[in-house]
Length: 150
Length: 150
DNA sequence: CTAATATCAGGACAACTGATATAT
DNA sequence: CATATATCAGTTTTCCTGATATTA
Image (cartoon, rainbow over all chains, first blue to last red; front, side):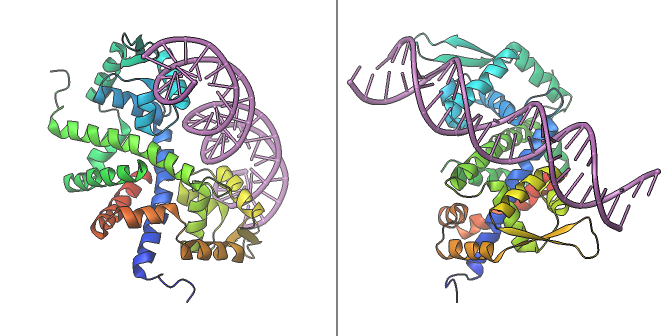
């Protein structure tokens, strides 16, 4: 027997890993494709929604939260700043940091988008999944978050 | 009231969508970082595992299965061909197509990797999640697959 | 002096679009 | 001729590494 422990348990884990690898690529592509059209990239959207949820933060703390390098987050933030969606004010206590917050224009944009139910992902979740399936998703997202954050 | 239907139901879906957006980015980054070191990219790994699971296929059918453009799959396949992990034989019935299969070298590589439990994702799934949680993951991956494939 | 923050510069990867040749 | 497959070429996006200035 080539691999002694390749029983059904291990095979099931292999299948899980295989499907998860395929899924992440497809999901990412789908999100990017749907955000297209003068709109924001998935990473930009994720940062804006995090700022909305958790309040003002610095570039570095956002980078840590999203699991990317501070430089990468820096360029992402610069684009959002150019678009007038976030604004930075210097931290009075720590001169190295600038505190980023959503602008009123960005909050307005969220408000309008939600009122019109324009968000593709929200529409899909609402229309394609039953409430019970939505609960399943929420639980699994927490599990996968553990995996992504080591 | 700015948005008449912004009740707790809608707020829960907004939170789900927000967390899912953040998760896909983090997961993708984690997979790429873990595949680093002379190894294969996540997309390459996904294609090889699909060929192993479903048998020989063409560039176009693989592109459809992974939700990407045939050209993108083409360059990905070319790299795997250069690395000696896949080989193509002309389809006897349709001169336009070439049927791609895993090489013996690739199967050997899988065999060795599995025997040594070298796959990061498999190890994480096995050690960080209980069997019940693994079931939850499997169910949720199927749900999210529906979302990714429209 | 060491550690953390931010920014500049350059590069690699993975996907895209458009155009073309070939075979059905 | 219309459709499907594959490939060539160029581009964009997103993230990376390395180096530097500044502040705690």
